Amino acid sequence: MDEGYVKYVAERRDGIVPHSAQLDELNQARTALFDLGLIGVYPDGVGYGNLSFRNSGNQFVITASATGALPTLQSEQFCLVESFAVENNCVQSMGSLPASSESMTHGAIYAAQPLVHWVMHVHSRVLFDDLLRRLAPSTSADIPYGTPAMARSVGALVATQQQLPFVFVMAGHDEGVVACGANMPSTLQALLASLQRTSET
Image (cartoon, rainbow, N blue to C red; front, side, top):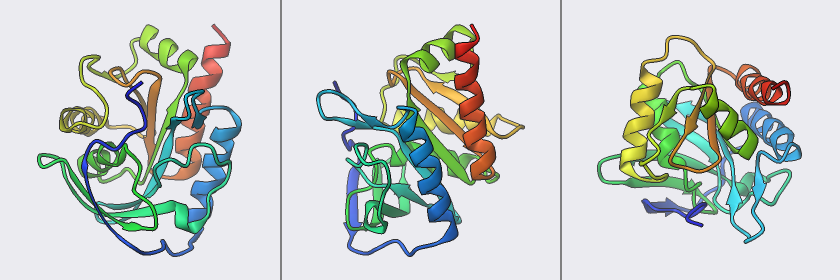
């Protein structure tokens, strides 16, 4: 499996993301998704799922790489992505650990849609399959995760959306589903509503 690994060029400086109300919100949402199995670890030990919120401009705070096994994170398990360059496939961050392998995708969303302040990337077989069956918005199945092509595709998809929150499928990232929105409660609710619909069909 090619999931969960950082594919971009990572430049990281040591530091700790300061505690904030948004960090508490992120932890709250992440624990709820963890409890539902939408964030976690596969049997081979590879973690999945990551959350972020916009900090300032296109900077954002995101869960660190390889934290999927933990129900709640500590300050040192978050990273501040200070800059990113899609074409150069490079991410610069501040934190004790490397930023999530999906940081480039999150960055592309923030850059494409100024109204987005939260991004939640989860994994679910049933939700992924159901959304594709419903012809939900999706990236192309031949674009793999963690690549400049995926970042460009996600950015183009999100830029066309007039309504938030917005849920879409990363068709080339098996089981990968993303929700983005203006605030934590509405973004989380959009994901949960999509999951609820899968149990009604």
